[in-house]
Image (cartoon, rainbow, N blue to C red):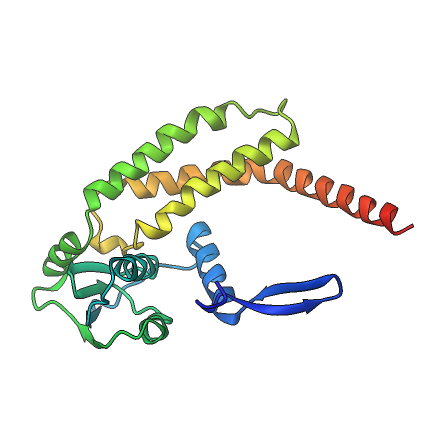
Length: 225
C-alpha cells in the first residue's frame, strides 16, 4: 500500500508505523460521502470520456478496472470508459499507472434519450438493480432480529455487516443522475432502507464503541502503573 501511495511510513514512540496519505484521505472522504450520500448527484448533460492505452498484464487491467469503477466510470469497450461526471483523481490514477490516455468532454446529439443508450451500454443496470433487491432481501431478517432488547454489541455487529454490504455498491453503482435511471429504480428503495436502519442502530453501536475504547484506555493505564 506504500508503493500504491495509500500509506506512508511514520516513526512512533512505540516503533515504526504508518499514516494515510492525502490521496488515501480523499478516497476515504469520497467513499463516506457516497455511502451516506451527503452530496447531491447532478448532471450537466455531458460525459467524461477516456480512451486508454490498455495496460499489459491481466492483474494491471483488473486493478485499473476496479479503480475506474470506483470513480464512477463504465466501459464502452476495452479501451473506452465513460462517466456522467469527471472524477477529480482520474488523471492522477492513470498517470501513476503509467497509462497513456486521451480525455474528452462529450454530449449526445440526441439529448437525454441518446445519453440513456450510452448508459445502458456502459453499465448493466438490470444486474445492478437485482443486486440492490438482493441486498434488501438478505439484510431484512438480520435487521429485524435487532430490537430494543438487543445488546449494544449485537446492534454494532449488525450495523457493521449492513454498512459492509452496502459499501460494495461503491464498485457496482456509478450513482447516475436520476434523469438517466429507469423508473422505479431499486437503488432508491434500497438507499432508504439502508438509511433507516443505519440511523436506528447507530446510537447503540456508538455506545458499544465507546465501551470498547474506555476498556482499552483502562487497560493501558493499568499497564503503565
